[in-house]
Image (cartoon, rainbow over the protein chains, first blue to last red):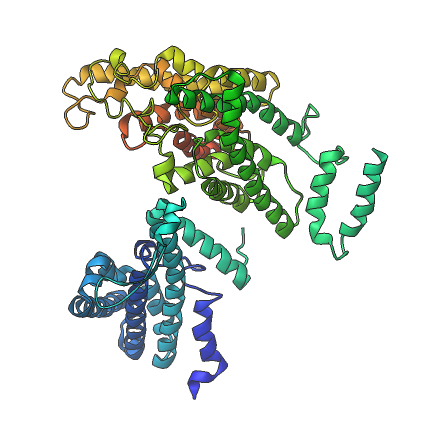
Length: 217
Length: 401
């Protein structure tokens, strides 16, 4: 079975760790900053991105030999845009509240550099099964970072931890009133975009330290 | 002394390279250089003309800050007595205030020391005294009633994000003390935004700060009676100068700040060019806005139909209000983050003054603009220096061509 040899393991684990699309390639930052205010948004966004990334990788990989080189960007875009429309419609049909909260950022998955980048760099050069694994790996690599960022942003910024459910989100835990009475305060900065930058920067720092990556000065 | 030297020599053997306790070398080194002067000398350029080292520079800044601390403590006590309507002596007021100042100071130093020592151990460099000055500055920028855990978080943020991630003392872009002040300003706006006074008084005792009054004038008429209907505090120019008004701990008394400025300039530690050009920039912009407000009768720059009272503040009021002087003297002149060329210093300071008035006057959301102005200019200081140096090179090339 191809799935368990070391090469396919590497295809999956590399983007999660030493070649993470957000923390090492610094791609897809805009959506990572925009949808990380709440944990449930980040989780739904991760699922949407994994779906789009895997499907587009597989589809483009299947038709890669028929795509004329000069118009490949247009074809890639049309495939990705159709898939994003599907996700958008699905969210509107089944998770209407969530779709309203994510608003324009679902549509903006089209412009997420990770998806285009993986199509260009990987799917057009490899077979469908490898392209699928690459989509899984990069999707989880993206999701891992934004879930960590949104966890800290929501916990310290708004004082809650929200998991996705059918409606407006299920509050798993919120900071008890007695803490506020004792003088605790939410860090309002983290809800704003600069807070997302700070948390993301710290996560990138820790992640690179753990992966042992040194960047050339 | 011999005994002390002996103790350090003996314990020093345990933290040498290769010994199991070698991770603690930065700690040992820091303690050693506190008791004994270091015998290390600068071995490669640039050479300095004075034997002024980083320790003396830091120490003199701390000396210049001590009067601000003492007055800050007295002011807390004075305002508390004022609010309660009782009479207390100077000593009693100061002691009352020290109960608020000292915990903030201690927490700041604990947070700063934890961050600095952790980074020194992980990065295997020596503990640098730079954090002492940052930690001495941070409490002076805090309101007296700030929760201590917020001070801890803010200080750690300032030392780590403002300094350590750039590589420690001497390589930071932003002033660490101001970074922590800015962090707290945006993170905990209810406590520290500067539109309500910070005094230690009875419950419900509150009012607008001197800078927030013109932002939301109750009955706006002219600049002269802008503060007339503020009954709680005396916001006359003279009282603003003496600093018996609510504010952050260290910034209210302008006389002591000026004394500190002269002391620092006399010792050659702070740049007088930056201080002077800050004031010039502020006066220039304030006068410009005064003229502007005369011509905008209907209020081009106004909000909600009323003219923008901030535009009518005189340059003198701008200087005395808020922490402009404190920021100018102690924050803008920080040698690491300010410009290094003399021409650059003039530009750097001038723009700080300009930005301060712009942020104060045009943006009603931020009552105070000094710390933001200084942080913005910290960012541009290397760019200013670069162009000053380049233009100098070009000038000399063309002269010799």
